[in-house]
Image (cartoon, rainbow, N blue to C red; front, side):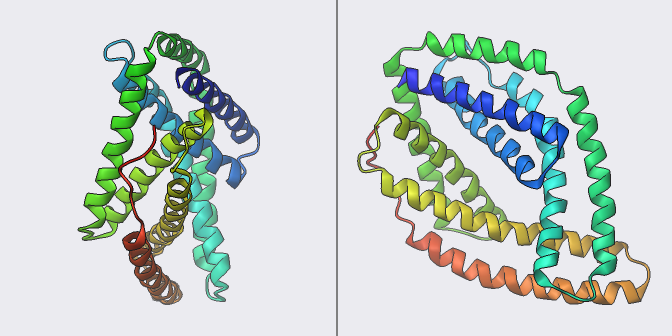
Length: 273
């Protein structure tokens, strides 16, 4: 187990560097997505190791160095997703709004470029060396117990939240918990401890992806609403209002399907770890 988590950590660190340099050079939409996804993966690993090592390791230093990059890349990705969904709607009256998004994309690209330029890779490499060293000192039994506690804690959060979904925030929280569970299951898979857990990994991944696609439309709706609120000319507002109405309809339709999907998601507490 210990060797597996060290190997997985090294792989995720390598992935981070790979996509960091790709985004630095190209800023392609998929590379930005993969950069943020890798940071999310590392956050899960860091959280587990933070719990397992007591005072030997603190995740805050890593979280602090990743945070500005993660947020900036997220803002740019949101704009790019909005543009993608706008094209998907094929609305003839969307030229003004698309022009608005293009301008916003340019601004976010500049911000990301500034963040990347300031990013302290030397500091990160130093933190990573300390992380691997501290992980190597962990006792296998302690690590296994911590992973089990972390996994079941998030499974319980999913159960509790999905029993009383009041709004969009609850669904988004479930997505966060699902991501944590997924990453632990991927870790278990790398150790060969997936007996009885393969079905859960498949269901967790599927549910998380569905929530993600629904959430993209939530962000899109918010962006269109912001554009409407700041538009002073009515002839610019009218096309955007029509777009917003269409998007809200899509959100409601997807939400109904999501709730059915989450209701059918069976969380088994008796996982093999």
